[in-house]
Image 1 (cartoon, rainbow, N blue to C red):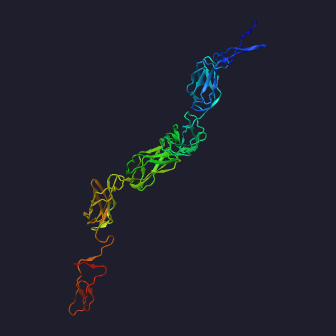
Image 2: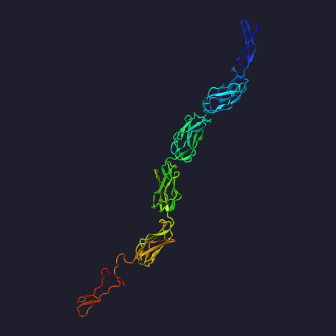
Image 3: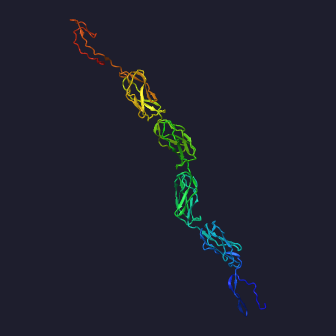
Length: 520
C-alpha cells in the first residue's frame, strides 16, 4: 500500500543467529534485509536427546542419558535451567534407579551421567519430568546381569526323615552383586552340611555344574536325626551361602539298642546306673515318637541266675529305662536281651555278677561215715556264701571246724583250721577216734557259722563184715595120759578122749582155717 508491503505474520521456527530476509517483486530488483536472530521460545516439552542404552545391573548407563527442554517448535529452550527428574517408567525387573536422578538443566539440557538400575529386565523405559515443560518417556532398553559374585539358596532344604531324599530339590543360584541370577555362570557348585546337630552325613550328588546360573541338587539326604541342620554352599571365586535351618526326623522304628549298658554288680543288688534301651530307626536314630513296651531278659546266663525287678517298661521319647533290675547268681559274662513288638531284638554288652558280703558257712563237702581214727573221705569242704547262696570267692580268712554233736565223746583230729581259697576251705585229714551215730561238725569264721549233716563213726573192723575170731594165746600141745599097761581109753589134757590103743606120737599144732592166733 502506497508502495510499501507489510508482512505482519512472518515467523521462523528454528533458532539461529544472522538470519536475513530477501524481498523480491516482478520487474523489480530484489533486496536483502539486515541480519537478525531467532531465539527459542519458552520451554514447552522435554525430550530424550540421548536415549538410555542397555547396561548391566548396577553399572552406570553409558553414554550419559540427556534430556532437553524444547520450545513448541522443537528448539532447545536454552534459557531453561529448571530441574529435570528421571524415574523408571516401565519396570519389568522390579528394579530401582540409582545415581543422580534430578539434575538442573544447563542451556536447556540435563545430563544424567551416573544413573543405573539394579535388577535385570527386558524393556525398561525412563520418564523425564520438570516443572513447566511436559514430560516424556524414553525408548526401551534392557538391564542384563553382571558377573557372578555370590551364591544363594533359591530353594531351601526342607524337613524330612533320616535317609530320605530332601524334596523339593535344593537349588543354589549364582547371583551378581545386585542379586540378579548370573545366567552366564556355568561353574561347579558344591553343598555340604553347615550346622550338624545330629552328627549326620550328607549323601547324594553334592557337586554339580550350574545351568543358567542355577544348580539343582535332587538326591541329597542326611542319615542322622537332628533339629536345626543347615547346608553350606561354595564355588570357586564366589562368596558362599548358608541355608535356612531344617530338621531331620527319625524314620520308622526298626530295632532296639542298649544305650545304657548293664554294669557289673553284686548278686541281688540293683544294676546301676539304670539300664536304658533305645528304639532306633534303620539308621540308628532314636525314634522319639515310640511309646510301646520294651522287655528285657537274661541272654547269656553263665550263673543260672534269675532277673528280678520291672522287666517290661513303656518307652518315653523312644527310650525304655529299667531302674530296678537285679540278678541273684554270680557269673562272668552275663548279657541282657531287649525285645519289642515288630522290632529287631538287641543284646547288651557282657557284664559280671559277683557275690555279696559273706553271711554263712555251708558244708558243700559233707563229712561221710568213717571208721574211728581213719581220715574222713572225701575231704570235708566248707564254703563261704552270701545271702543268696553264692560263693564269696574273695573270702580268704581262716575257717575252723569242730565236733558239734558228739554222741561218742570223740575227739576231732587233723588240721581243723584252714584258710579259705576262693571262698572254700578244704579239710583233708579230719578223723574222730570214738564210734558214734549222728556226729555233726560245726564250722566258724569270725561271726559266721555253719553245721554239717549227721554222719557215723564205726569201730575199727572192716565196715559191713564180721570180725574174724582171734586167739589171745597160742594153743598148747596136748599130752596123752595112759596108765602103764593099759589099753583102755586115753584122755587128752585137752579134755578130749579117743579109743584105747597105743598112744600116738605127739603132733605139732596147726591152726584151723579161718582162725589166726594172736600174738601173746
